[in-house]
Image (cartoon, rainbow over all chains, first blue to last red; front, side):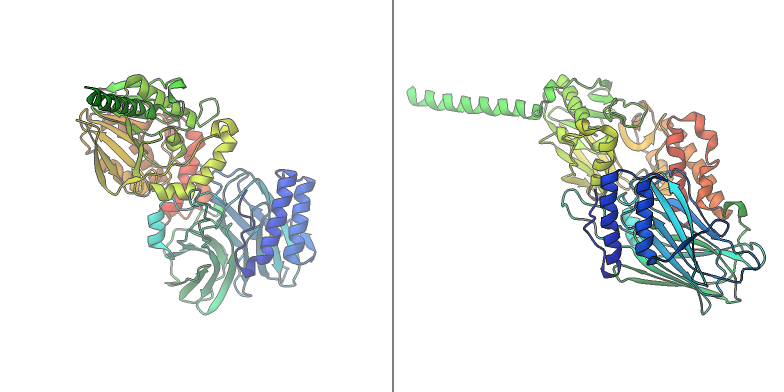
Amino acid sequence: MFGHAKCLGSQWSWLCVAALGLALLSASSGLSSAATPEAEDTWASLANDIFGGRPLADGTGLVSIDMPMRADDAAIVPVTMRVTLPPDDSRRLKALTLVIDNNPVPVAATFTFSDSAGVSVISTRVRINSYTNVHVVAELSDSKLYLAQTYVKASGGCSAPAAKNADDSIATLGQMRFRVFGKLSGAQREAQVMIRHPNNSGLQRDQVSLLYIPANFVDELHVWQGHALLFSMKSGISISEDPNFRFTYVPNGATTFKVEARDTQGKVFVSKWPATTSEPSNNSSDL
Amino acid sequence: MPFQSVRLWKATACLTLLVTLMGVMPAARGGETADPLPVTEVASGIYVYIGAIAVMTPQNEGAIANVGFVVGSSAVAVIDSGGSLREGRRLLAAVRAVTTKPIRYVINTHAHPDHMFGNAAFEGAVVIGHKNLARALAARGQFYLDAYRRVLGDELMTGIKIVPPTQVVEREARIDLGDRILLLQAWRAAHTDNDLTVLDETTATLFAGDLVFLRHLPVLDGSLKGWLAVIGELATIPAGRVVPGHGPVADWPAALEEERTYLQLLAQHVRALVKGGDTITAVSRNVAESERTRWELFEENNVRNATAAYSELEWE
């Protein structure tokens, strides 16, 4: 169906193996639905590859993932990941991994958080290639892994054409926005980082030349509050065009935010913003 | 005298053969055996087929867009080729039912499948489009071929090819069909980033492609801000009637008002969500709801439009 044999670089080579295996699995067993044996096998195999056989505990009450059951646009599917630790739990969130089981490259993104970040919610937008289970795995500071799952009906997101406005995409490549929203509750605030990028998956083929439009996507992002790293992210082709991350955090009194992003062509984009806001408080029920 | 007779005979035979070939070639690929699309002559020499207000299905053979042709004194221009090869052939048959003049041009108003899947029916014609059309077809063609195979089925998909333009329009171009000038205009990103309109100066008839929608909810696949700006410019075109991409032939520029209202409301509601700090998920509730009963295919398209609008306007 797609160029599964096309691998995206040495650090992604193990993902290639997973993708090939997944492609064979999907091809032989048809679409995996939410709770079929095929879907469970797919996940078991992915989980083993990604987490090296470490146990994944049921994350109910601790980590959750929120996505529309049916996506209106398979290339822009919102996802919100939440981690809620009870007040007497002294552990901190160390990492979040988002896995879209049936996508050509299932690991959509991995976020790693600094100790003081205070991130409890992260939202982004992803491409969904076929009806699929989506998993989020939270790693806490004691190295325990917790799992949450949902199911999304959408298809064609990964090969869907990026860039409704191709000239604009070229002209604005790498431009960023940073926005701080009004106070949430207690010490937490919410911010959003956006970067203009086509995030070409490398899976779109020009049917005349038969050449694939080269992969060119943001694969790394770092956000600092002053000198303190808030979080880092490694990502792949499942993140939608113009990557967008909205997250909660605990302010540390720093007066600037800095974001550094890299793409697979080796371009580096850096921007800084003052840590002020005059934003109206957001509707917290949308979080 | 014998020598002159032989030369004359050969010349006549050659000429006959040439004329026969010219007559036959535009009707190649079985066009004459297809049941002609029922077209209406909406102005002198301007023929239009009004597509079904529907999504593409095997039953409607993908014939959901308006397609048509213009007949000059020496040639014909086809404007959009339909949503399947079958429809393209039926359009070709419709041309042949009206005239034997050669089809010199197939003008694609933009890259969407319902407007260009029939291109392969028109062998020998020059395909013309917006300067961005070839790039859009390269980026999206395979995706459309794969996606629509699921929708239309193998039989209807047989023979459908992506046929890119060999002539492109940067801003404006004029083509002459013989005592009949067509003005082709390329627009900034609006419905798509490769929209082209065709104005028949003889009858002041504007083929607007999907820059104009009537009855069918406008579909946003380019730039909302661009489209609102382009609507302002389109209104100054000196046409008396418009053939929209979807919906009935209508008076000009009055035909713009309904879509202007919808697109403005879409922008207004989405801007309010962005400004208020609402996330993109909020577009699934109550954006442009007051427009629901004024359009067909609202449910199928409004939230996707709003998602596209949000991802554009959040950069303001």
